[in-house]
Amino acid sequence: AFTRIDHIGIACHDLDATARFYRDTYGFEVTHTETNEEQGVREAMLRINGTDDGGASYLQLLEPIRADSPVAKFLAKSGEGVHHIAFGTADVAGAAAAVGERGVRVLGDPRTGSMGSLITFLHPKDCGGVLTELVESAAKPDGHA
Ligand code: CMX
Ligand code: CO
Image 1: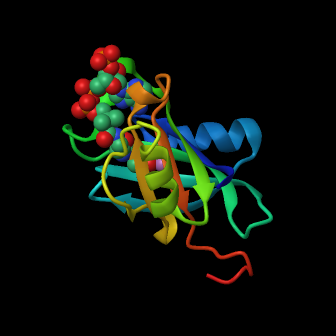
Image 2 (image 1 turned 120 degrees about the vertical axis):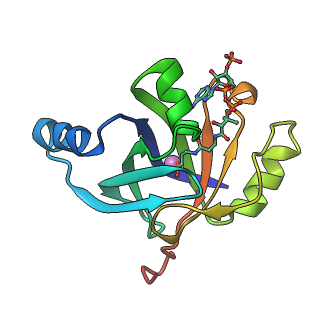
């Protein structure tokens, strides 16, 4: 089951400038930054609100670290903007298998995402043009990591 919006991913050229925009305009603070070599991004997570399953909802700002990464390709083609949406689930492998049975292409086995989460992606061409990520948060419902 999908229980919440985990994050909205936003592609940008300049992570620090984009984070400043969200702070100055809305008061959203960066609560976490990391580099994910496998995904080819430097990212900032801006926590918007907590959720009752122990997770939270975020904006995820993404700056490419390699020209051949998905976010770099997206920026070259479409420019800055919304890159993907991510739904939270307690079981990413099970959720991906269930969606895959409906004919949606699942882009690989679960791998490491932000803050120790497990993530996988669904092909945008099978999702009405929306690149969709599935996230199993490292936070558990009892509030402990
Ligand atoms: N949203 C909607 N459509 C997208 C898209 C996006 N973010 N990225 C690509 N597409 C579309 C393209 O516009 C293109 O459409 P047309 O054929 O109509 O021109 C089509 O998908 C193919 O795009 P491409 O540029 O040729 O790129 P690839 O096929 O090589 O890769 C995808 C597309 C989705 C398979 C690849 O981007 C991917 O594997 N993404 C998942 C990983 C990822 O995005 N990681 C970064 C985020 C990390 C994180 O969130 O933690
Ligand atoms: Co994401």
